[in-house]
Length: 193
Length: 299
View 1 (cartoon, one colour):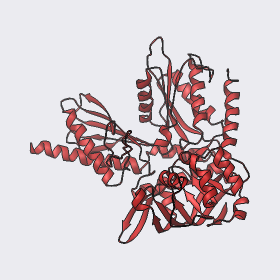
View 2 (tube, one colour):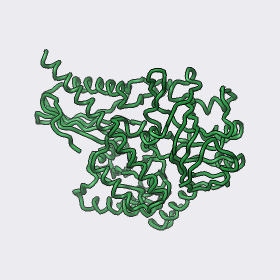
View 3 (cartoon, rainbow over the protein chains, first blue to last red):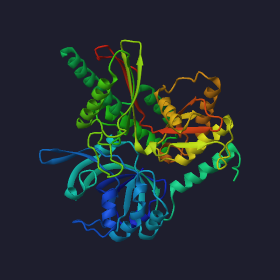
View 4 (tube, helix red, strand yellow):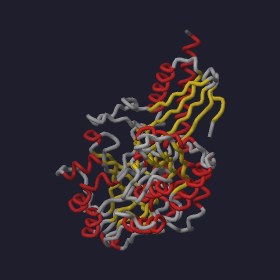
């Protein structure tokens, strides 16, 4: 188990390898479909994402007095951001993307080129992941996108993830896919074309 | 009239409680299967890591009475009711119970207009929630509910045999090839370890429906048809040698279970319909008295 503090540096990110289990302490920024499309199309936001982590998550948020509280915060399927992610990694200097289900070739290449990693959270673990959020430090684009799609600035402690795409061109998703296809072929015999 | 009103109020209350329990607590048979399979993953491995987080999540959701997963999914009701009752009243009451459960946060706002993209905000709209009603000659109700998340629904698959890509002919061996192919196609995207519901035969609609009805079965139950019982066992055992593992992280636990049924088919058709259920296998049910009070939990 590796313990890392966010924000990251390129040096720190380049040390990570596919398969590493990591616990993150520090800042995360949520961002899902609306944010990715908006940033890709040239939209601007009032914060810098340089060296930061974006989390594919549409949290359930309640307001208690003047304070926000996150009650469920599991990852959402990342592949929907595949058309935008590479460009956003490049333009905004992201060092990590957290989500579930993995991402494709474009993102893998961008991670390698610009020094970024894809971190896989456990899908469905909405309560465990809400529990490690220590505070909500800000919210941006709330008016424009609504609560699940807004950018929530969070401080987390020991947020658990696995590195599944690293900054060296490796992807656990392609490795497992290849290996399981080979295993399937040996179970059912070689496929006919 | 007053007693009728009283009945509807009670029914609504019982249905909201069924939704709450389904969304926040996994049935014991599923918890047990997850716990036992977790031991098969090596300590310090990624698969074990995922399984540990999953178990922690199950406990937390139950203690906090909050949804296990923020995607509370498709809402599938299977309701047996006393045959003299007006089904439209039961349906209306269930719809209002779903709205109430959404307001209380047991269900996420999950019903989106497919043309405009607008969320109805209360889980009600064309096709949502889904009801399967069966009148019966008893005075009690049997209400069962499945909540099925979008991630796992997206990795379901239907095959029309023969299928050249997977090399599947119209026999049990062909069925086996299709089901294992569906597991490989899904990888970790369905939030595994998963549970499969499979229908051999039927048409495209009845095949998928019966495959989902398989999720009403308990994890440990054994298929009454020995041929299907063997196939269920074989598929779980073989799928767990594929190396996909929890969340697609690699490991031995790719499937927790596989439940198969067979329907008659047209001579011209041979479908294999595979539904995938994520580890957050939310299934509950209750027997309700004639006055709609919860008498007994089914799972």
